[in-house]
Length: 130
Length: 385
Image (cartoon, rainbow over all chains, first blue to last red; front, side, top):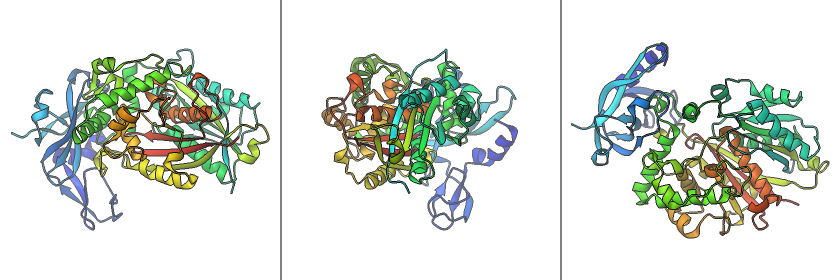
C-alpha cells in the first residue's frame, strides 16, 4: 500500500462513508462518480450505518501472501442497516462462534502493514454486536 | 460483413507444471501446433489471451512477444479479462472476422503460473478481485467463492455432497484426457475429507492453477475453404459485464452476466437450449458450475444440486458437462482457460476427442467467466461438415 493510496481512501476506511444518488436514492459503498443504476452524476457522500447483519461468511484457512500468521480469519459479507452490502473481516470472534453471530458493529483496526515501506493501513472491521 | 466465422484449426499443450518452458515457449508451441495442422496459412491478425503475465512472470508487452515468436508482422492484440481472457479473445476474433476486415486470425491463450510456489501464484492471480474493497482484507479468490457457496447452501438448504459429486465427475472425465492436469479419480469420501480452504469450500472444490497454452485459427468460412474442409462454425458469440465486486450485485446467488450473454447467444444462433449437445462451463470452483447451470436455464433457480445428483453431468448422460474434465480436473491456466474450452469443444465437434469422444455431437455451448462473474462470454459452436 502506498502513502497516496492510504490517504486517498482514509475517509471511507475510517468513517465508512459511501455515495448516495440524489436522483434515484441508490446508495453504494464502492467509490462512484456516476450512479450504476440511473447514471446520474448527482451523488453525495454519506455516512453509512455502523451496524448490520452478516449475510454470508467464510473462514479463510489458505490465505494470500502476508496473511499467513492470521489464519484462520473470518471474512463476511455484511448487509448494513440501510441495505448496503459491504465486505469486511469479522474480528473478536472465534470461527466456532461465528454461526451464532448475525448482528455486527463497526470497529477501528489495523488493516495491514506494508512489508517494505513500513506503512500501516487503518480502517474498519466488524465484530459481533456488544 | 462476412457470413460465417469458423474455427479451422487448434493446438494445445497439457496443463501442468512445465518447468522447462517459459511463457514464450508456451505461446509458440501451442500456436505452431495449430498453424502446422493446416500447413501455416497466412494469418492477418494475432490475439493473445493472458490474465497476469506482468505479476506472474515479470513480462509485459506480450502482444509483441507473441507476434515476434511466430515471425509475424501483422497486428497483435493482448486480451485481458482475468479468467475470461480466452473467451473474450474468441469473441473479439469473431467480431474481427465477422466485420470482414480480417480473414484468418491466430487466437492463442497462454499463462505461466509455475515460476512461483503455488501460494504466491494464487495470491498474485487474485488481482482479478477489487483491490480497494476486497483484497484489502486478505481475500483470495477462493474466499469470495466460499461466500457464494455458503450463501447458496444456506438459502437452498443444500449439503456439500452435490458440489462433491460435480468434482467427482470432472475427475472421472480427466483420467483419460492426455491434456489434463489432474488425471486421477476421486470419490465422494475423499472430497468430504479434503482440507478446508475457506469454509465451506474445500480443496477438491478448487480448480488447480497450471501452466498452459492453447491456440485456435479463426477464419471466414470462405477463406478456411482454401486450406481445409473440416471446420466448426462459431454460431454465436456474446459477452456481458457485471459489477467487479459481489458487494454491488443485485443478487449473489446468480451470475447476471451469464444470463444476459447466454440469452443473447441463443437468439443470435437461432437455437434453443435443447439443441445443445454438451456444455463447457467455467467450474473454477464447484459452486460456479452449479450456479452456471441455473443461469444458463438448464436447472431451475436453487435446483442445480438436484440436477447434478439426479440428471447428472457425466459423459454418458443426456447433457454432458465438461467432458474433458473442466477447470476442476483439466486444470486452470487462467488466461488460457477460455481457449482450452473452445479447443475441447472443437475437438468434440470435429470428432477428434479420442477416448473422450461423445456420440456425434452437433452443438456446444461454451461459457467463460472472469473474476467472480464480472465478465462472461458465451460462445455457441456448431458442426458444419
